Length: 292
Image (cartoon, rainbow, N blue to C red):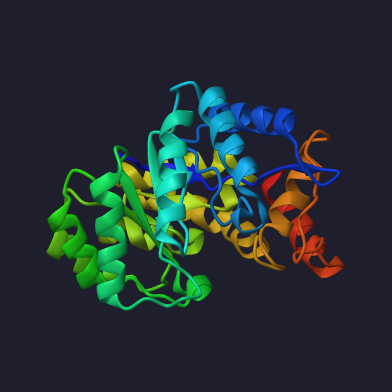
């Protein structure tokens, strides 16, 4: 099952277009530095501003370049159930190992609506499903009782959750209700260490875009229960965790990557804009502190 350091990959653009050669180099760099899974077309990949053809091309490039070395969990969510199903089918054709399905945003379905949405998709998907709850972005909140019921209905299909609610008590509630076999992942880098203690098994990470080796070392220690080392590494990474959100994400991550690699452009798509000078200073300081 999915565990450890799993970057939610940024999507490189150059002159407004998806930069596939840079993305493929980025995938290799991530794997070479210890990332244990990859998530293309998530929030950090600017899924909100990539068109459908790009969406499917990005997943395909990720799966081809990963070539089975680590699992690829393709972002496939939508606030339209039929569009989500289309993305799932395309992700399967592209070679993804699983799909990440964000709770439907903007139209604010009830818990009954969320049950119906995910049930419809689980009944038609051949890929494992990772639920994604991030109410700070979607407004919709996928509550623990709904998560537990979905795993009860589809124990072999709805297998995991990325939880970015910020509520660590949910890890315990979901573990007690769905059982320890239900795979729980953090969606918040600064909370990942506490999440391990409570039963999470990894993090779909923003920071791992920029510091994959150090993030992999942190997650390896936490998975092994070496919390002394994990705490030391977490405190080293903490300024970078904060810097990744010093401006609208993923602009800080892309700025950092452009400093690390001359082949990675800092471009973001409107309505996002480049980092402010203050955010750049925060990123620069955090990177310097890590020797990056």
